[in-house]
Image (cartoon, rainbow, N blue to C red):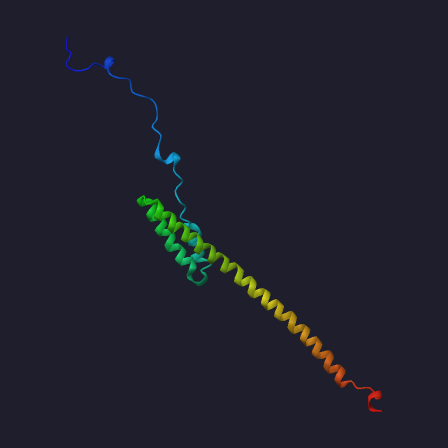
Length: 131
C-alpha cells in the first residue's frame, strides 16, 4: 500500500461557492460620451467646444481602459459639460438669432406703417387749415 501522496477520496472537496467580485459593490464605470462628442464635433462645432469635448472623451476612454476610474470620471464629467455647452450653443444661438430677426422685421414693418400714416397726414392738408 502506497501512502506517499493523498488519494482522491481523501482530498478536500472543492467549494462551489463563488467569491464576491469587487465590481458588484463598486460604482459602474463612467461613461465617456464619445458618440455625443463626435456628433458635436462634426455637426455642431460651436466655438470648437465639440472638439474639446472629443479630446476629453478620448482621455476618459483611455483612463477607463488603463483602470484609473477616478481620472476617467473627471474627464467624463468635463466631456459631458463641454458637450452640453456645444449642444446648447448650437441650438439656442440660432433660435435667438431667428427671434431677433423676426422681432426686427416686425418692428420695421410697424415703423414703416407709422411713417406712411404720418406723411399722408402731413401732406394731405384740408381747406380748414388754410382759412
